[in-house]
Image 1 (cartoon, rainbow, N blue to C red):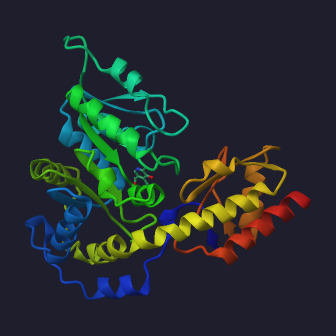
Image 2 (cartoon, rainbow, N blue to C red):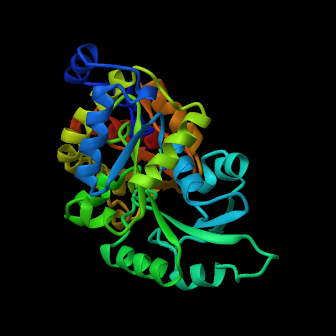
Length: 336
Ligand SMILES: *Cc1c(COP(=O)(O)O)cnc(C)c1O
């Protein structure tokens, strides 16, 4: 199978499997796992924070972030299409009693700061207390500009809000922004990062922030059942992902551009080449046959996500030949 559904589908490399097999481990709930400890220390340094916490998933890292910043009856501002509003089961509300205040994302994925300002609740007992602004970068494969993130940081300072980044793909953002990742992360009080997407680890995410923040998050991680024991087995692969993964993402972006150019030559597809900024490609089927296209491709061993628009994601386990096969199959579908 050639799998374009997501960058989460990558399998661990041989090097990762070997590192996992020989990892030095201990009980991480006691803080005894040297491989987890070393990953956390390396990640904190790499992303420019005091502390880091290894989590089971990105969803868990975002939940811990919101719950560590906000208490019961507080609220967080976020994008209407934010992962931590739409795609995380309402976790912050369900488990944290923290109310989301979603704001329509602008076409570039940012949140209009004037709208954010208008959404901040007055100090009045009728209202929830607005504590946090949560941004996402990349969002739908789009990159927030460094300038916008600087403005968002100043905005939060002015309004005494905390600022969280859902940085599941923040390294893709850094590659596209042509900067070190710390030029992005320095604007935030906390950042979550997925090791298990483009970076290639089989499992795991990281949450980064101040020492006091990570202490609160560690307590909450235990509470939600995320205290893992010999987690160094997973952290060993995560370390390789964090060290080597970022260097390779440029290939995914080039492959996504190549795929975009190919798809743009197929008249039945509506695709804006400028919308491909990183490793995610969106196209609309003009005739609305997305699910037939998906089924046709699946029969040829190619998997895609047939939403509206259709989504294709490039990653470690797809190369130019795979993309040529995909393009050939899409053309055949429309000729048949
Ligand atoms: C994938 C993703 C997450 C959640 O990560 P999981 O490990 O799948 O829980 C959070 N935010 C964004 C933007 C993501 O793409």
